[in-house]
Image (cartoon, rainbow, N blue to C red; front, side, top):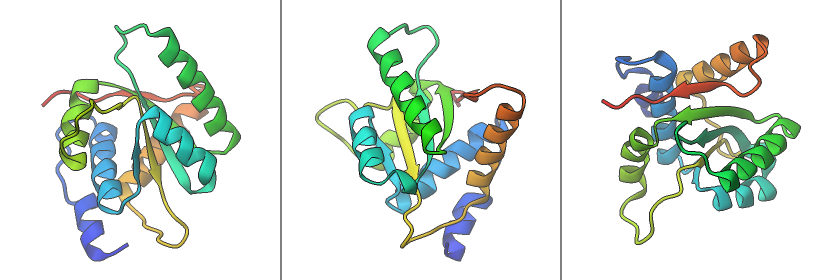
Length: 157
């Protein structure tokens, strides 16, 4: 990790829940390092290709949406992540997630599938980020309280 990456990760203000802010910072750093995978199908391909590089899986859905197919995808992804020791974090606030990720990815002819986002750390290009550690600590804390799939809400700004 370069000093610039550390600055991106550590020097942003925390105006919302600290974990939500940390998630936003992690997404930004992961994108800048080419370590962000967006979409259920793309994530499945990435996890099949190199599951050891995946360190965090964000599963995003708003609570008012009840999509059976999406729930099946989530169940399968969660099982795979647990089997491969990948941290999982369920998030709500797809609108906010869209505001964060879409400018990074750029315009697309098709809408982005933000339901599954992976953060990877490739062994030949490692990086460290205090915000990522904060998210990991939150996941571990939730698991210690028997909340096996941690949850947080991304708030609109």
